[in-house]
Amino acid sequence: MKNVLKVSVPLVAFSLFMSGCGERRVLECTRSDEALGMKVQQTIKETFKNDQIHKMELNMQLEADGLEETAISQMADAFTSGYNKFKDKKGISMNTTKKDKGLQFSLIADLDKMDSATKDEFDLAGESETYEQAKQQFEKDGYTCK
Image (cartoon, rainbow, N blue to C red; front, side, top):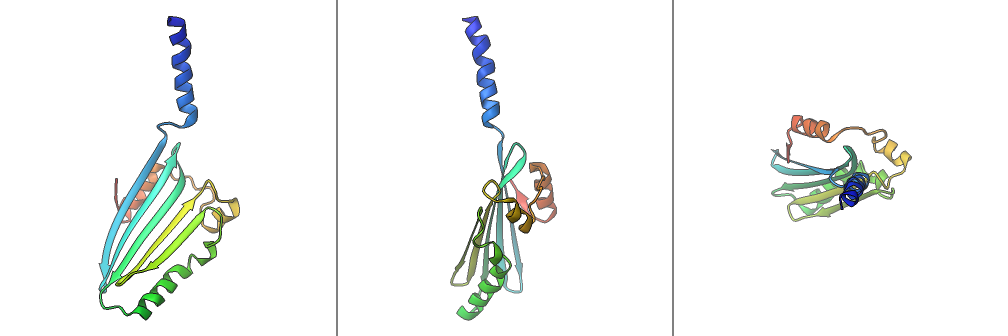
């Protein structure tokens, strides 16, 4: 029985280490701003595996009282124009939804699915920020992280 345990315990530990169990961490940071009658709520979620970023999700809601439909449409167009070049890229998905008082924008970047050219365009080539470094930077930028 002792021999079985001597072989089994290291084998299980090695399997867990190789599968990455326990190495996945998610950093979620939020920030709310209000200026010129507009409210902006941002949530950024980054998934790390072995302390390297693998996926980023950005959700942003913009609300402004008294905006007309044309102003909301113009705001949506202006907001997404900077990301249009990534619209059909592998590993990136985007969505903009117009709401009564504003819009909602979401962007998901899955680095495991992106090719190196897309990472270069998205300014992610060689991204080596660790979980703690990312958390410190977001908090420095006014986000609250958990």
